[in-house]
Image (tube, rainbow, N blue to C red; front, side, top):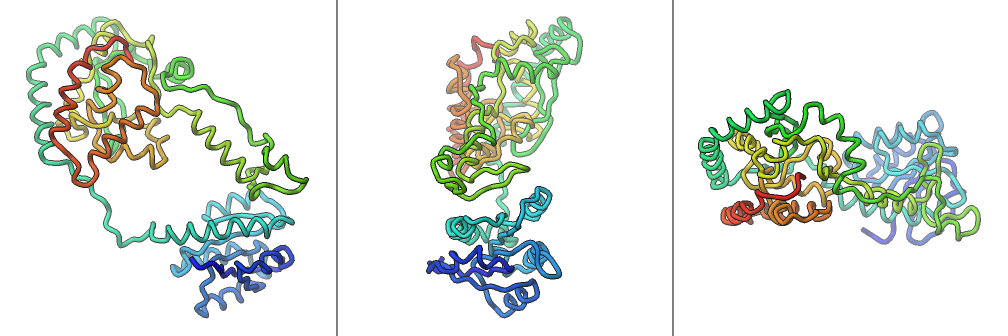
Length: 397
């Protein structure tokens, strides 16, 4: 990106941008209405960014933004909307349309834009190919050796274990009413019906939210931060000055720096995974089949169906999978879902308490095993052999 940024401004608030106009790093072109702006752009002018007032003669700035969205030539050109007074409905409408930024006119506007414009121009330029339609989608293919092994092991174990499974099913039915199996929606590389032998009393899902607050193994202590808390950097500056551009959220104002600090703190203090320690919902038979991992045997049916593999990352309940939005977290889905995997043999079999961060790290480590030509059939065999000592565990987690 050139050091000199070409900025097109559409509107009549030139005085607010005077400092920007005088800056040698920016070249500001000013037009006063949509028609003049369209004629300027149709004359093969390609600004690095567009700043536009919302209120314009005969129309508004979002009308021009809609025109730009229909013109692929300007798909990577940042568009910043300016308003005289903050309006929450307009703010929501602008970002629903995916406007790149939203500012309220203020004495600090030009200084804020000096910081914001280089960043947003560079970001849009580097990501302009993200929505390209001619790219071939990445198609995941299960290695043939892994699939053949899965089918052989799953069918063999089910055949040998079927008499014992019938006894366990009878014991479950005698101890508590309800179905002997449990089906839930899980997310691996797709959403599927996940099968287990029932180890809890019926209706136990209703208790999960309460138990998650008190007994979640992955829960961390949270600290309270609110959007009204003052930014320490802004507090040290003269009145009216801010350390970073102002953001408007509903009726609140918050600087960009303090917003990101609080957002990161909230993300770090929230728990994605839910695992209950010494879960009181578990029956006596359920505790036995959990400690011996017998409750996992019906997942061999999932393996035969192709939903899962013998070795992989554990499929997640939908409510957990929806929280994994960051690249560092969602990477785990690059590997197939499995009955056993790295985190089971590394920590569960040792009887240790596993943090959420450790589980994420191990899930991602196994996903790396599937990048490119990294897959090794013998690596999976080693994990299966290491799973055998982990079948007997002391805690029903």
